[in-house]
Structures are given as C-alpha cells and as structure tokens.
Amino acid sequence: MSSTDSRPISKNKNKSLLIKFLAILSIARWYNISLITISLYAIQIFIYENSFSFLIQEKGIHLHLYVIAIDLIIVGGYLINAFYDFEKDMINQPEKTYFNILVSKKSCLNIYILCNILGITLTFLINTKILIFSIILIFALWIYSHKLRKKVLFGEISASFLTISFFLGIALFNLKFNLTLALFSTYIFTIDLTREIIKKMISLKGDLIVGEKSIPIYFGIKKSKYIIFFLMISSLLAILSLLPIVLNRSFSYYFILSFAVISYAIYLLHHAKTKTQFNKINTVYKFLIGLAIFSIVLY
Image (cartoon, rainbow, N blue to C red; front, side, top):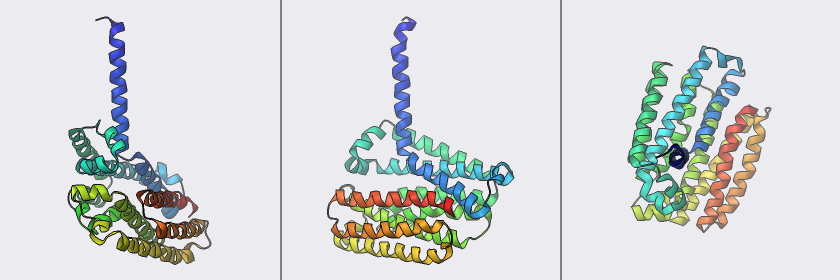
C-alpha cells in the first residue's frame, strides 16, 4: 500500500481518537471541573490570601498540586459514576449516552484508576493531612456511585456534601477555619441539594425503570415539590445570615441577586408539572451555582 493510500486511514484514526477524547471530556463534565478549579483558586486568593504573589512561592506550588489532584479525583468520580449509571443515562439522556458509549466501560475504569493514583501521588507531595483527605474523598466518591446514590435522601444529601467537600479541603489545606467560607459552603450545600432533587424529578422515568429509589419516587411529585420549596426558603435564610457579614463588600451584590433569582425559582416551582418546566428550574440553579463561584472574586 502506498503512503497516499494510508493517509485516509491515518486521518480516520486521528478523527476517532479526537471523538473519543471529546467523549471522555463529556463524561468527566469538563464544565464542572473548570468551575471547581476556578473556585479553589478564588477561595485561596480572595478569602485566605488577598494576594497573588504567593502563587509562585512554596504554598502556591502546593496549591497548584492540590487543585490538580482534586480535579483528577473528581474526574475519576464522574467516570465511576458513568460506569454505574450507563443504563439509566440511556433512558434519560439518550443523545449524550450514544456519544459517551464511544468510551468503553473498561476504559472508564482504567482512566478512573489512573486519575486516583495520580491524585494520591500529588497530595502525598503536599502533606499527610491532605493525603488522608484525598483518600477519604476517593472512597466517598466510589461508595456514593456504588451504593449511596440508590438510597432515598442519602443519595441526594451525599451528592451535595461531596460538592462542597473541596471547600472543606481548602480549609484543611490552610489549617484555618473561616466563618464566611463555612456559611458560604452551607449556602452552596442548600442550593446544590435543591438542584439534586430537581434533577431527580427530571430523571424520574429512568430511575423507575432501573429500580433506583429517589425522593420523587418515594414521596411523590407533590411532596417532593414541598421539600424543594423548603430548601429554597432555607437558601434564602442562608443569604440573610450571610448579608450582615459581607454587607460592606462587593460580595453582597451576588447574594442580593441570588435572593431575587431564588424567589423567581419559587415562582417557577409553583407552576412546574412537566419535565421541561423542571429543566428550566434546573438551568436557573446551574446559573446560580456558576455565578456563586465567580462571585468569590468580589470578596
């Protein structure tokens, strides 16, 4: 075969590798990983340091290692979750799953193991406390994907707790408690838990078919809406508790805006009956969480 004949094969192979790489990024939820990366740097720079100069010092190098390690571990978490969630995702998100199927279950498992090994190695270079934290996080992500996500209430609560776990990790990294960060984490927990239950309303059909128990399945749609409403009110109360602390800072603008956005979400919830309507509330909350991350720079 001539070199000219081999070119189409080479192009097709490169195209296939690119598509598989994009599928891995999709499974790993690159958007969420980007938000986590930004939030970790923002918390350290604007809440703990109030400076950029430390980034080239020893503490800054340790922060870079910590952020990369957490990103790798969370990528691993998404991969193992996709490994266990394949059948349900085929029902709830068929278009996305047909793209993700390009990455085999074996590849997901291999990349999951590699990400965790690299994550543990990087945290070993920081200190023992962060190393132990990373091992606990890896185990928690696995036990969530394998067991907890199938349990009523435990699945939603554990998912939201895992979302804020890297905030706890950054406090451990600094060995310093910060009241604003603690209250902010509590607020993020309430809005993420709200979104988790909303997502379960959207994935109701798939959960029923695969036999997965969730709040909407166990309590029903009407009672689940009351639970979501209660959490939305809790978020508003969390905002009111944070406002006096940040009132003289630009950070307060985010919470004032959030109060209005959550109030609008309550209005949407009152009228929500279909999957499309719950999807709209989910989009509002995705915006709210993304905005929360970027608002840290206002601190």
